[in-house]
Length: 149
Image 1 (cartoon, rainbow, N blue to C red):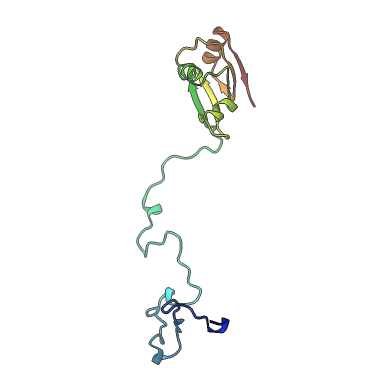
Image 2 (cartoon, helix red, strand yellow):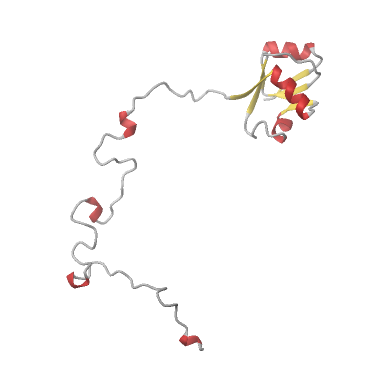
């Protein structure tokens, strides 16, 4: 076998469809694009969410409410939850790093502590926000609170 004798396997290659090369080719005339209309013409682009003349879904469904662009979303932990997490993960410090390492929050989450429940263990908190009731309960248990910017 020589280099010039090498050929692809039988059936591996196909002839190119030659569109618009006359009626005898079987693909002449409209070049397999049907008759008339935007899709048969050059430069056609389907519009996003176009439903063929039917009223689009984004116009059928009414608007409700609004999104406040200034809203700050916190990942909330109550004191009762904090108590169980401190015992489960043996935390000395309830900080963003410890929570991230244990898979409780993501890197970009903001954490807020709320006062529902009780806390008995002495824990140091480094969080983004804390309620007044929670802060009082933490300090009564001997812990400290540091609010991060």
